[in-house]
Length: 311
Ligand code: CP
Picture 1 (spheres, rainbow, N blue to C red):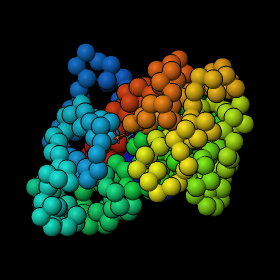
Picture 2: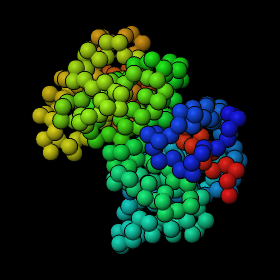
Picture 3: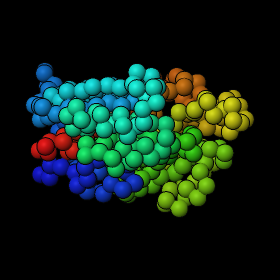
Picture 4: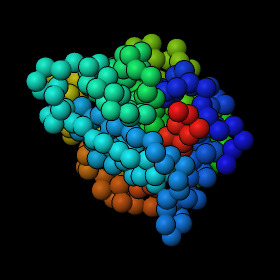
């Protein structure tokens, strides 16, 4: 285990404001947690007596399940609330819900919400640790960390490595958390999207903006492929799925233009045949299920570093 055993802040809200030291601490601690996961009985008593609430106001398969598994592997107890199953539908405010969860003796709340900034609002109104599991189009820090962990696991330190992030950058919290974390660790980041899905002035972050995927993948070490949010099509943000696939879809044919050791990543859920062909989604370049496995170790590290040794 790393020498320093806790994060400076009480909550994990995003990677934009997380120090390089704390990013590396989480990644190094996740390596220790990955060892725990390989044991015949993958469970340690580190968070025995701690209670964690999962508050998911948007659907989730990976994030919610892996936060729950991570808590259980550290011997914490969990409770789970969804939008439709909570008193939110009766008009209770988010802050009142959180204060009630805190009053039951809960130590941490993991929150996913459609509104950017919701976890920050919760953090200001509770003594509990708050973990952002995705807020609107703002950040998804545990996804950013598990992506970075996976990249580091596959190709070593990220300084100088080229990462292409392709897809709906404008609406993607995954893109933003990747961007902040990767730039801090010295990676070169190229953002590729149709002009309508590229945020204005995003190049001010230090990332390169490009509309030419074939050019960008030539010397890339990683491609992180974002989900095309079909719900946006109604708003006319790109002309047609066929045209999107032609210009921005990742196919085996397109990957012939890349380095032979290129690694293809996707946070899930995948739209097969849209942003990724099935051949690529199931093929030798992809590490998508490794990302999912690593997500449990990274989330164990987050819980451990926020909660262990604290009252
Ligand atoms: N990557 C991700 O956030 O997936 P879920 O929406 O299934 O949690």
